[in-house]
Image 1 (cartoon, rainbow, N blue to C red):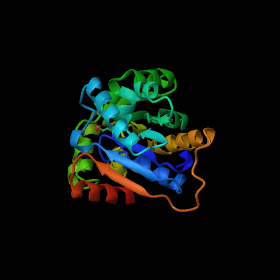
Image 2 (image 1 turned 90 degrees about the vertical axis):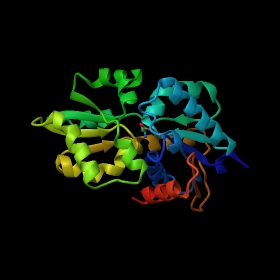
Image 3 (image 1 turned 135 degrees about the horizontal axis):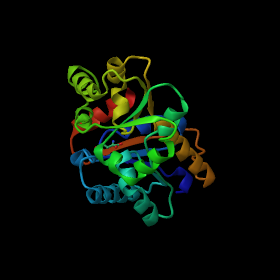
Length: 257
Ligand code: DGL
């Protein structure tokens, strides 16, 4: 099989990376995709860096068994813990990561705080600190770790009272402060965007990094001349470490949101 016709692999700690996959399907409709959600081990964001590295290698090995031509680490936490090691190990294929989309938020240049919602690990890692360093002169940036939020989305819950009160409680620390934008620094969070908007009001801009990541994926496929030139609509395969039909059904539903 020519490399052009090989699938593109995606992985995340669970169902979150589907928010990136859905953008990839829009941008690259003729590609085949294999998605691996590691829901058995979710959440990653409260584990140790070494554990997340090991799980990221395991996920990558699994995708490589399916002969993927590129890997998208559709998880901010795994990107911050493991992307360099993954790139050093799998030198022959493009490995694309995701990080909180701070740049577009800062460039909005609006008055008020730029809040970054992410997992505790993403916000604690070096990668995020150098990103903060780059923009802290130009914006009032507030990191907001959100342990506990991923668990709702893993159950397929993306709106309702539970999430609403979780978010209200989280943002209560910023009561009375003007918020200009919120960066969703975890790939699970775009699924709760509607509920977040209800809590914050529609004037707060909510930004996620999935479009930037898939644009980067496309650029790399073009650079390496491995983009699929087929006219047929690509196939999508969803795998999960939880061997249950329920998680696959949740995944398919989320992909359609
Ligand atoms: N979806 C993930 C991220 O982008 C990780 C969530 C988790 O497992 O804690 O960070």
